[in-house]
Image (cartoon, rainbow, N blue to C red; front, side, top):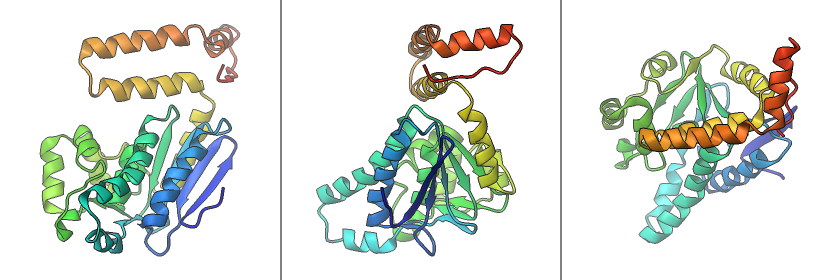
Length: 258
């Protein structure tokens, strides 16, 4: 599979999807389509962990303004249909039963930050710049910038940053729980984390992701039921038996995903 706006590589079970739409990784129509196609790479059996990365100075400035200019000629139905291309990719990243990390350097705003929000764990550089400046063009964050954002930081902080359009650095983003980790070299940190996750039991990681995502929107009883069902499934896996055996034999387990 070839891409024009992305650099996609798979090495030792880790898929790295690098935004490569120079100079600022604007999300134009080509990148919208290619992000949707890149999710298919994440679904491949050879991939155990995904990492989204950008450049050294820009992760992504979000949607190409020219796209919004073209959208003036679309009907509202056409706009929603085009939005579903990118929104579907973000939804797939969020729901695929594999860990997906975002390594954030430099500017990460608008749709670029919405892409990062769809990932499971975000690692940002201390001097990165994150935020939602959509009000500058009379819009709101429309592909997770409101709905996913509020779950992470709470309604007050979400409204404050969306209303103001202010950009915050990586350290502040960590304080408000927008990112989980801060590192001088986010991509190296993401790679190290991905290598650790790659050696863990795939089914357990996938079901943990699914249960946590569902529990976020469910009542405690429903979430607890789902936890129990997931655990009953994992108890019957070869990886669980291998983990127990490795523990008894005082060695590292060798998980196969079975």
